[in-house]
Length: 307
Image 1 (cartoon, rainbow, N blue to C red):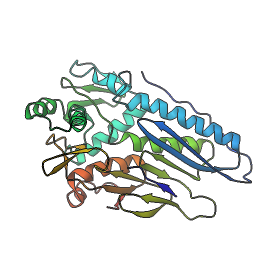
Image 2 (image 1 turned 180 degrees about the vertical axis):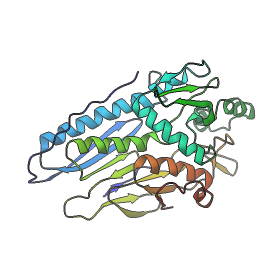
Image 3 (image 1 turned 120 degrees about the vertical axis):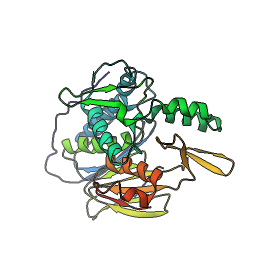
Image 4 (image 1 turned 60 degrees about the horizontal axis):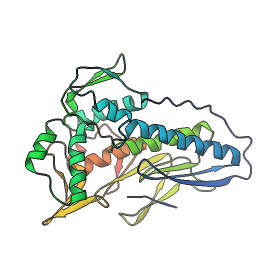
């Protein structure tokens, strides 16, 4: 049982498959990556192949960090933000393109509640949580001027984007961990490993279950219960770890891009979906809109609301 924790790079991987399965062993690996804990569990009959597979996973995660981290000045997403309001089109990697296009569609369907351009506001609220003090109205207004998914233009022929407003800053925090979990599972699949579970800091993808089992058992701490997963993902979002209290109000690090305010008095949301990227993004949306209001926006997605 596992508990949920609440430059452009091109990746080349030569797929290989183990010999006839025998003496299948359980392998478990943990590493601190992307500012969180990455947990990988899988079953294999070949210890050498298992080592190669997990080494490829760590390489892949380092590459994705160089794409999505908004803490690394040399990351692709930060470098892209440097071109805001210059009129320049910038070609982006396959990883960033896929996440940006998925995000744009979700932004359109939710009237901007999910928005990759949230960076100026999320940066402001991170500082607010560190200092335990609310941002000023002036700071919120200034940051909000650079926020809006419609300020991104897409060139689908050349896989390029253009940021139209000054001081834009992209933040993939609401989707990147889920995308990473999916990608790590794909890496394992290239080695013929499908009895596997990947936990990217609470965003989990579980493939085929362990030998002799019908599903993986995942403990959701916020609900104090277990759920079963097989070829599905689950993601959690909420203010369990990142928040501060001002007066009678508890503010989360999850920021509403429309109002500019951190979500108030938030409860944890847990979403099951076909892949971890979808689960991760939808959990953030439902945190901000609530279950009932979200239903009218998210009909195009296959998901289950756990709480």
